[in-house]
Image (cartoon, rainbow, N blue to C red; front, side, top):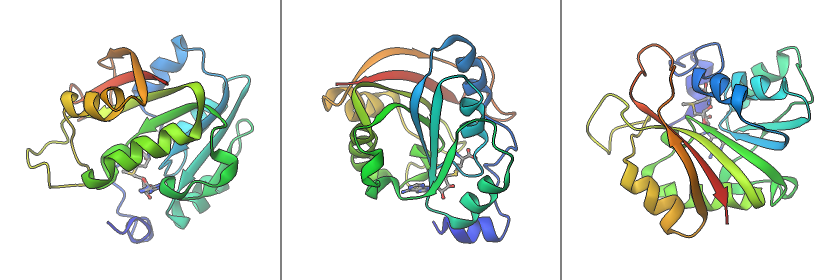
Length: 195
Ligand SMILES: C[S@@+](CC[C@H](N)C(=O)[O-])C[C@H]1O[C@@H](n2cnc3c(N)ncnc32)[C@H](O)[C@@H]1O
C-alpha cells in the first residue's frame, strides 16, 4: 500500500476528521500521562485528543509525509510532536522511553506478515511496565484475511502475538461503547502492560 500516494490523491476513507470515539471515552476514565506514542497517526486527531490532557507528551509518527505535513498545520493543543518516522525503524529517542502507546488503525494497516515485527516495535518503544492501549479492528467488513488494508484480526491471534509471545500482559478488554458510524460491533479494545 502506497500511503503517501493515497494522501496525495485525498483517498483517505479511514480519516473521520475526529478522534476515535473509543479513545475519547477511554480518556475519560484512564489515567494516561507521561510520554505517549501514536504510530500511524495520520492527520493526528487521536494525538491531539491525548495531548489535550494534562501531563502528557505525545508523539505521533507516520511514514506518509503528506499526513505529517497536514498534522503539523493544525493548531497545537498541548505539547504534541509529529514526526515522519517508520514504526519499524524507530528513532533512538522513542526507544524504551514511552509510558504509553496508543494503537488505532495502524495494526490493521500493516501487512499481516509483519505483525510480529509490530509487537516487537511497540514493545521496544515502551519502558518496562509501560502500557499499550489499543482498538483492534476485528471485522473490517470482509472475510478474506489476505484482503486489506484494513486487515482484520482474530482474538486468538491477538493473544498469541501479544501475550503468549511473552511481550505483554493483558489487563483488560472491552467492546467500545461508541465507534465511528459503520464500525459498531467490529472493534475490540485492549489494555496491555509491557513485560
Ligand atoms: C489506515 S491509516 C490510519 C491513520 C489514522 N490512525 C486514522 O485513523 O486516521 C494507517 C496509517 O498508518 C501509516 N503507516 C503505515 N505503515 C506505517 C509504519 N510502518 N510506520 C508508521 N506509520 C505507518 C499510514 O501512512 C497511515 O497514515
